[in-house]
Image (cartoon, rainbow, N blue to C red; front, side, top):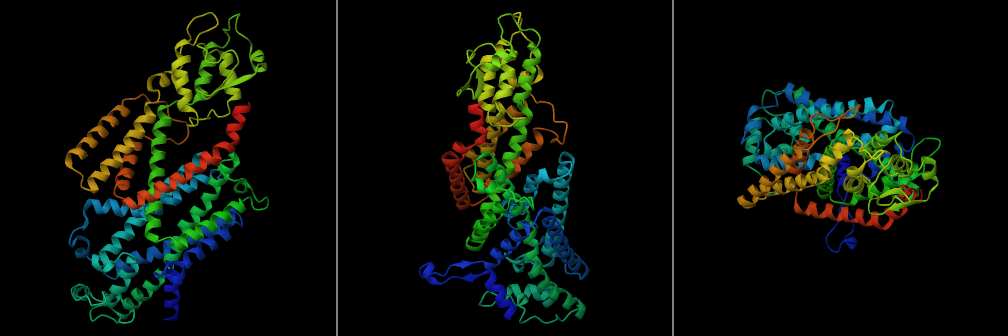
Length: 543
């Protein structure tokens, strides 16, 4: 009883009423303790953190494996539980809401990409690790969910601890007693089959061994759930300081996040600060609201990634454009054209409209020669190496409107455009706008479906969505990279956007309000601090 009371207090402690008027405020000290313990392990080093994470993962898989084995070997899984009243008791809308709520459990997969600098042969091993772990985790989640839902009627599973309830109810009651317990719910709205104090071996074919296995197993799973949450928490706490570290290196975030401990090779200060802030939020923010906000934020990030794949495949890298222009006119300079050394010695001007550094005397020129390409490639550090998005929009507009139509050789003849130049001429900024429109329309369509909008509004939204998808699919595509690449572009990214949008549209409006406020805070911080301290921006302007 003492242990149960301590456990209940650790997950549902009540602060004095003086902090919240007459209404006690509930918090979760256990969440803060777990996060601080994970943080203390992370600051010891990457190898130590990897060992701890491996141990927690093995323990978590052992607990989940026990649930599956116990459910099927004891005969607790029943066909009636799976299809009564139906396999989708809340309909497809309920499936979408549930999928959106638990989506935060997939946070660790995108965080793994932040550790690419610490991985041997990341171009090969990162995709294998991410995709492999994603497939394995999905299989485990599917197996455990099917087992738990089949072990107990849906009303007895509850919302908070369904795995524990499934084991406890089958230890204390037969299937007939479970159904009777549902019909005879007491005045306190508590099921007798879910009470440890009244639990006794059922009068059936269950042996004492089965009773002990399920009863003790329910307690073990209660403790094992903490370790299950620890693995997801650990992955996020490992990746988030690395994201802050990359941002701090450019000046987008405070410099303290960019400091590395020379002994451990870990951003200690950033890890500690991240752990403290995360512990505070986990302790004092309502779990349901926090889970909804994290799930919606994760869905948005994954949608951005899918949209980014489409944009990168349909928009050429600017460095490739500059290289092709240089190759087209290299060796054919006219007598009036200056040498590279002469251009390099001239002062450069930063064209704010195009976002590019160009040589003086050639600002907004209608001719783009090899010397301009070399100067741009040398001095504009903001040009991405492989299709980044920093200046693509402005640069592509400038290339398309001014330079591409008049690329000439030294003798006045028109140069032959390369594949990247042709791709830019054909697509322009259409991939950006179409992916944005498709994402917005997909979210609105999902909202209309889940909130029962008038049918004409929903059909109109779907019609515009279908037309936008057709228009995007007709755009030209560039060659995929030599390393790991997404297959069947744009079909696969579009399916990802549609699935994510379907789940996002089913999220509560309160969650949308919270995530909008959080995004507003981030945007304000960027324009008030980050953009003014960006080392990349300063270097580009001063080069």
